Image (cartoon, rainbow, N blue to C red; front, side, top):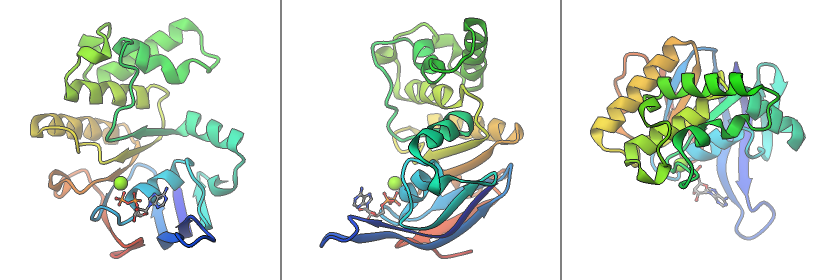
Length: 224
Ligand SMILES: Nc1ncnc2c1ncn2[C@@H]1O[C@H](COP(=O)(O)OP(=O)(O)O)[C@@H](O)[C@H]1O
Ligand SMILES: [Mg+2]
């Protein structure tokens, strides 16, 4: 489903501060696979996720998702790719604090052509999957950290993306909430989603549903 081929990413290219964050990375991810991307801080995990998500472009090499050359798509088409296929879960939740959970969750659907009834039912489904429906009408600023994260998950999943990218998803969670997050990932895996989790949380080390652990170090994959 995802093919990362010969990808390098140089930040501040052509200046004194030029820095190669990824160097000739190759990674193939099959549909339905769950991959843990591990490595110390600075090893290039977030950079690789952002290239797969289409949030940034590689300096060299290509990123292909379902046959589509994401790394060469113009911005407008990248937005469509993301709206159709990709859900991203970050360490920071980036929620609209004064809106309710449900209002936050429907945000990604606002520009879709869906009618109100479909939007409401998709939001409901996503909140249920993310174990946050009981707080649907609560203002986000009144939620606990774990609940905020589940709200962010519901928002990331509301458009039913096939590819789910998580960047240090448990970095701000306590153990109980991290385990809840892992349960949600397991259900997503059972639904056939393709999942990449960048993390150095040891809780992800021996999960039965993880197909592969890919280690990164200084911008290269060290175990493929
Ligand atoms: N926008 C940027 N400009 C310059 N350097 C960056 C930028 N983003 C990341 N880097 C550098 O690239 C390297 C890899 O970063 P990152 O992909 O965030 O690693 P990780 O997620 O594994 O911690 C780090 O050395 C980081 O400082
Ligand atoms: Mg990172």
